[in-house]
Image (cartoon, rainbow, N blue to C red; front, top):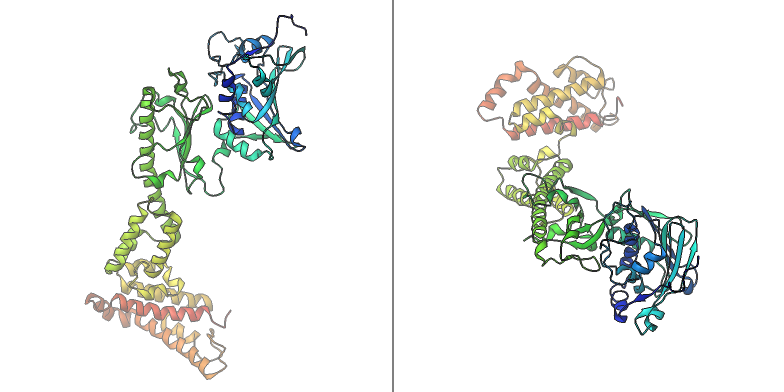
Length: 553
């Protein structure tokens, strides 16, 4: 397509501006690519593609960023794109598509210069309504334009290609290979992606991969443990209300492990793009809390503030500006609220974990040892740690609880209880009666359990002393053989099992022989916890022998 001779592309500039707003302002790849992605967003593209090419020589290295937005005509390029510092949001911008409902990200029209931070040459191919404009921005030639007027090489043709813009960067400064994964993660920090705007990336011949928001918070250790959603949190009755409370969107997250330093704090976005790097908005005395804190909030309303409160490279806000005073107060209040709730949640979870792992409630654990001041003092110290999540890592705390609980469990004074046969120790009725100080009932319950097990093993229905005399003993014909009965010592063990079993039946199973004296003894305080443990230990011994019997198998 030919144009009148009077038509040409020209960029007028102050020579210092190109360096100050290009190579000096942008020196790393992620913010530069983010500016090109933002241009795609402002062009109302639903997708942006990034290609990294570094498989050949250094001369072959290039970066391609392609969007599928409304593109630019020759007039748009001439009158708007090449005007350095043009306010992109000024009314009357002909490059903007009236069908696009997005509010633009760009403001100052300076992002076009950013790619000079990593490359000397940028070739732009843009299509709009059948017209394709291709032109080249060459940094060396721009520097050579001493009069401040640069006329890029260009070509205008007719095409059937779809609307959109492709920027190809060549003569790359970087000599090392591109880090696709690192760039993808960085871009996830610069944008909020959703179904209306996606970014895909590839390196050399690999297939495209979609960048999603989850990359922003991915790390090797830990996972999101507690999440506060917005605007739900900011609209709670116990939270001070601000004029913008309903307009704040996003999530604040507390991980179960310390998060990597680059993602600690709350990141702020406006119009889907970063405006403030992760910041802590500190409250007094909560340094531990901030190790777990991350998240993001969308605060689109700040884009309307005059004067502009967003820095040129969109990584920080002008917090000293009076227009941001309320937002700063809001963020500090929210962080303070979340810190308090996090402490409570962590404390509750620590107690829950102790219950699950050790099957003990710290309150009951302390109560069961109230007769031992030293143990109670230790449990109090642990309880204080459990209620203060900032004092120690949870895993370390659980290790300490395990050590202390191993040395001083529930009812630590009752050392014998820990070594009882598992059937007795884990029986709910025996345990309840013993720790309710119903020692006689606990002993009798244990005897009945033992009797029932003997009946199950032998299939006999008789009970008490008679049952034990029939099934145990040195005689080879007895139904139960504790040993092989091949030596005198082994036969004596079987006889001992019989007589001990008959004894406990006589003492605790037969009411006619035992009820009155034992009841009176308990009433007089003569049948104590120690007496009960002695009986339980005897039954535990018998139970162990029975479980390890030779016959029947």
